[in-house]
Amino acid sequence: MQTIFILVKCELGKAYEVADEAVQGVEQVSEVHSISGSYDLLMKCYLDDATDIGHFVTSKIQTLAGIKDTYTYITFKAFG
Image (cartoon, rainbow, N blue to C red; front, side, top):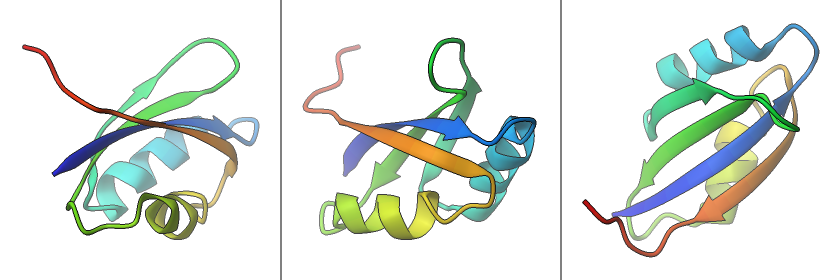
């Protein structure tokens, strides 16, 4: 299992709709947080090891209505 975080910049006024669609419609999205700064949302996603991260982001996330831009962080290890 691989964990990625995706920063999402939304069209004006669309952040809540994008967040709802991501949580409801994309199985791999576990959490969506509204954030301050240059981006509007932070998505936490769990992907199978065989999943191509680039293909997932471009086909499942960037195609959601209301998204203008994304920035993806790939994680190495979780501490807890």
